[in-house]
Length: 164
Image 1 (cartoon, rainbow, N blue to C red):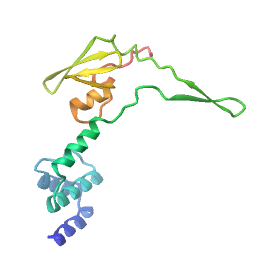
Image 2: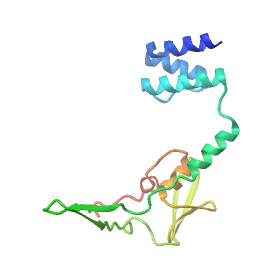
Image 3: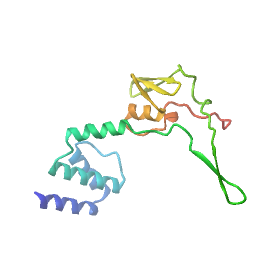
Image 4: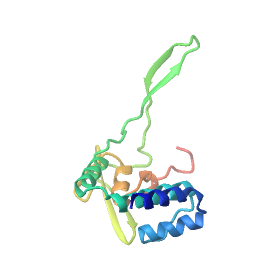
């Protein structure tokens, strides 16, 4: 069976995008959303190997999910570096205010996503959603959708037209 897998993997780079999409549907059982050759080649190759040699254990999947959920997000602006005319670098704090986009602590931000009402409570330091406290709106959006989103964009908290 190993030679069959090796032959299938060797044939992937020679396939057209249409052929890769068909192969994707065969190995995953659902149509591919991507038309990117490189992405399709990698995903199909991974799936062929996983089917032949075995997938991740349930324990490994749970651990990966735990690590992804616990990933820290930057909540403060990085230190600003400025160069003086003499070539020396000075450090200062960059004061960015999100108060023009975030409501006061205790307020709720609501959005409908895939037929489900998403309600997030703004805390003094963080955001509460379904009993869990998240450090950023981006983390909440990722918990809701399973993919990376800009939290302000996901919840419709864009800057005003004045360019605040």
